[in-house]
Amino acid sequence: MKFSFCFTNVKNKRVNFVGNLSIPMDRHKYETHRINDISGRYFPPDTLDRILQKLPGNPNTTEVGKSVSGLPIYKVRLGNGPIRVLMWSQMHGNESTTTKAVLDLMHYLLSGSREVEFLKGQLTIDMLPMLNPDGSLAYTRENANGTDLNRDAHQRKEPESEVLRACYEKFQPHFCLNLHDQRTIYSLGASPIPATLSFLAPSADAARGLPENRVRAMELIAAIAQDLREVLPGGIGRYDDSFNPNCVGDQFQMDGAATLLFEAGHFPGDYSREHTRFFVFRALLSCLNRIADGSYASFSTAHYLSLPANGKLLVDLRIRNAGHLFPHFGQDEDLAIQYREVLRDGRIHWVPEWPEEDLTEGRYGHREWDAAREADREEILKTPGLLRLLEKGQSS
Ligand SMILES: [Zn+2]
Image (cartoon, rainbow, N blue to C red):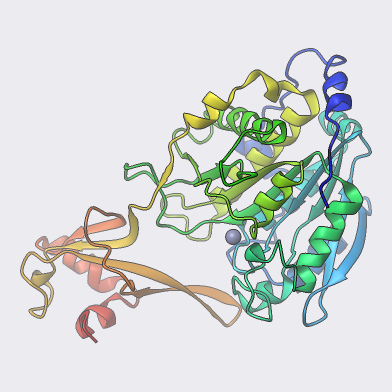
């Protein structure tokens, strides 16, 4: 079923607002809205329950369905304005950065300031902070049936996919925000700079055409990138727009809602993604403001297309001249090592591993060492888990 959305009302609404009411929100002000008792990468369903119960002002929270194993899926509604925005996070259970940011955003939207009242008067915002509670508990991308929900948008054989679809059909959002984490490999184009945030206005067809809703998504991303220039200079990339109707974003774009993909990525030294959490919060707030005052329309698709495309040129650890460490490496051999995220005792541990494919050629490391230097060798051997991996060598 294809919905046709009428943007005319949204457009007319703009006439009532002059200028951009974008809220300046620096890191310092953010800290007053940040929910301090959540942190790190593991974000299971009981943590969500605890936070939702503690939010001030009893926000309108409903259970909209259950996961494969029967865990509840919640939706929080804030605002009562004419423009409808639907967002969902943790569709992939091991992608929690945007969930933390969404909860910070809820906390902010419950603060009752003049800026917040403006947003809530313009927008009705439906938020599903955890679409895949089973995957969130097990820290897996997939749901309990082993399905990647972001490849199930067309068939919808999983209950979580039906829940999201039902929310979409009932709410008929003008804007959809599809919130994810991306791996540490992503760079800004061919540079060694990590893509700390990436965005995509997903394609609505195989020809990657430009229907009105996709153009709006592009304009909005360009506006967000502009707003974040001060707080995150240079760290914003553009995700690949190959069309796949099994992906939820592509499906909703096809159905007429202006749909944006947010990808929370790596910031130097921030494996817990607490800095990235702030950038996502800031991007979400910018997005809502630009929708509410209509000012995204002053940006163009060219602005969006000028964002650097994501490259895949980063690895977690890079060691040059590895023969200086152990003789089973060639004297000037370069090594690339990736972290695997392992859930143990309720926390995520980063375990160094050899990547499945050869990633040594033309890659940069988030940490780089030259084993020919004594100080670097000392640091390498002190890095947890690394000595064991290096002793075994790459062939084992
Ligand atoms: Zn994802």
